[in-house]
Length: 305
Image 1 (cartoon, rainbow, N blue to C red):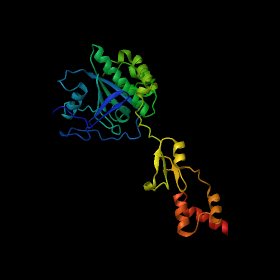
Image 2 (image 1 turned 120 degrees about the vertical axis):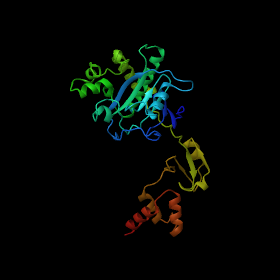
Image 3 (image 1 turned 90 degrees about the horizontal axis):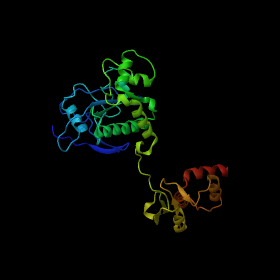
Image 4 (image 1 turned 45 degrees about the horizontal axis):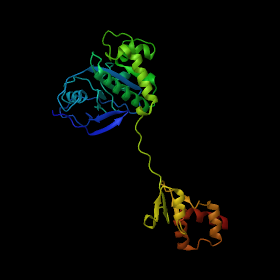
């Protein structure tokens, strides 16, 4: 299989994330998890997998993703692979993974899995992979409004599976005869946890928000009458100056902000005083001024009884 091309590329928590979901790309018909995690996510589970040498033009995270799609990762299915340059997302957050070796336990069924690609050398490249993992974990915890105590190791779920009990910190690091994972991060897990917590507190680890919509004040006869628009202004004061008789100023949400609308009672009394005309003319003028004609007329009828 050729080097993969992501369907989407974003920055999340300061990490470049390449989206290549195996739910969309499964040419070799590999087995896939089917249990939904929608509304059930309780945390993030961190793993380590071995650093691999890659060909030019790709990264270890892409190569692990490609190996998974090719059916070469046995029954391992994780949400993210992350290396020193980027992350590749393999599963949507709404779908459980196969990564915690706890069967239908909470590790597989209710946590997002990150495989951090490192070596035992713990060199600059490894440290950058670890840093990207910490940033990604922090962003995910923030996304789901979870605290630092919802950051788990693979070993945590093995200890739970084997009947051990204790605090999250204890279960994250307590020795398990089956596997100690993340192998390269566990020796300094407390420091890694502090790093994640630090990124959770910083702007760089927050979920990217959509750019704020620029507020514009439109001068037109009515909210829906775009053809009558005189102009759109970033300054309310400038919009008010441009507004003339028969026109109003509407903000970006369509709310009339000038002239300030009167209450239905006030308008109803003005209608009774013949200030708004009659019949079709009244309806047109009230509508153009941003009032609900039927609501005004209903109040007029009540006052006239």
